[in-house]
Amino acid sequence: MEVTSHFIQHTDFSSSEGEPLTHEEASRLMRQPHWEEELAQCKPEDEAGETWCRPNFSIIAEDGSRFQVVFLPEGKAYFTYAFKEKWVSFLPFANTRFQSSPPMAREKMEKALRCFYAGEHGRLMEWGYEKA
Image (cartoon, rainbow, N blue to C red; front, side, top):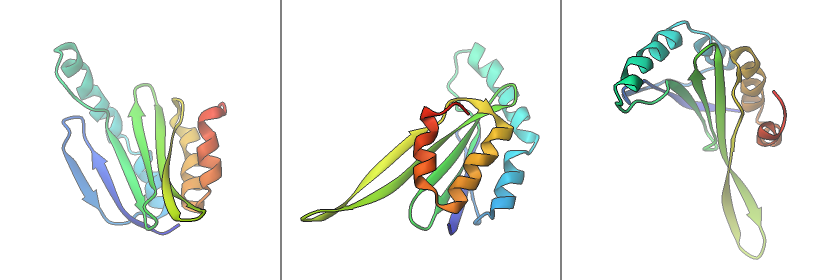
């Protein structure tokens, strides 16, 4: 699958857009230790009742599909995945399909990342119903 860009979102809702990532670059980004530092910033804000978001990164493909990794404490993460499924009947139309995985160890996220880069929509859509 051809990736066109990626975005990183921080706990303060700020974000940055980046160049396309290869599978290897996305895998390295997922293993960066700075995610733990960002997650540590969530706790004081959470206790103060302030609004924040979990740090995450999204990869956007040329066909419009999006794969997002959301980081959780204790080395866990989950992914969300969306793609447009084209149907042809009397009139062609596209339906956006969406899936979210259960929280899992970040090491297991590599399998989902591999499926995204391989364009395996079906495997990623089944993921939420499997035990990771």
